[in-house]
Length: 113
Image 1 (tube, rainbow, N blue to C red):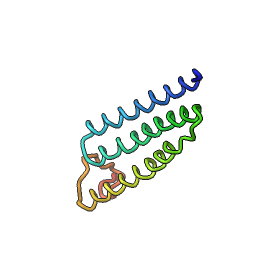
Image 2 (image 1 turned 60 degrees about the vertical axis):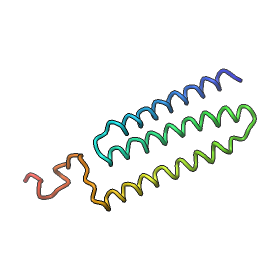
Image 3 (image 1 turned 90 degrees about the vertical axis):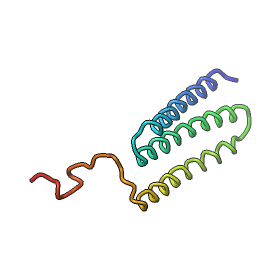
């Protein structure tokens, strides 16, 4: 295999591993449901997308079309945001409160004159 392809795939995998690590740390360390929901959905989508992109690059160089990787990427990029949105709507429906501070300008009664 060509060294440039190997280095590019390795760089994509390392970058993806960083995003996946950030998502996992965010899931473990953030204080409430809404923040915990945000970290892994965004970071994991980027992480899985980068790994699949590296896999498509290597498979294209080996003469395969990489259709499986393309379909997996499509399904991940479609289902992760939709499932996160549905979980957030369910939490709002159950009136789950966030621990994030509310900005002063968000509540008209609290604004200073």
